[in-house]
Image (cartoon, rainbow, N blue to C red; front, side):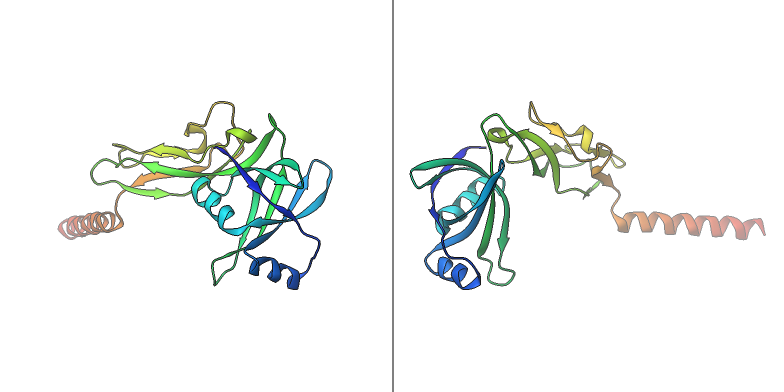
Length: 202
């Protein structure tokens, strides 16, 4: 994942009213914390930050230019308004180059299963520990040609070099099953055949 630079401003006003004023000014209230430092209240440029998330995902690593200093930060939490869909608040975590961080990375399924197979995806993300500047945008699981009954667990997903899986290795990520209609039809046919066999026996 690429490193992105943003110019940000310190915030000196707090509370709901101050947050609303910050958003009206085209900025997003944010808090930067970590590494034993006191939390720092910042204002992020709304349009630029939204573009960063859109292009780099919610695990974006930022180089923050603030008051003639720079800080490397990981986007930890993004709070979005439930109705109006704008970013209300952001929590940022101070990171250092070479430091490992814990992140949830999206699972993307590629390929098409064998004919008659239906994809069931149980996990949308995997939790991994990885160097802050090498967070992957996603991890890929291929189901190309996978037969009915195929199951892929977290431990079978290929992770980037240097990263460690934190999700339960036995957790099911994807499975290939029969379509429900076909399965029900098969069961119905089997039931009918058994009924006919029992009737004949009587």
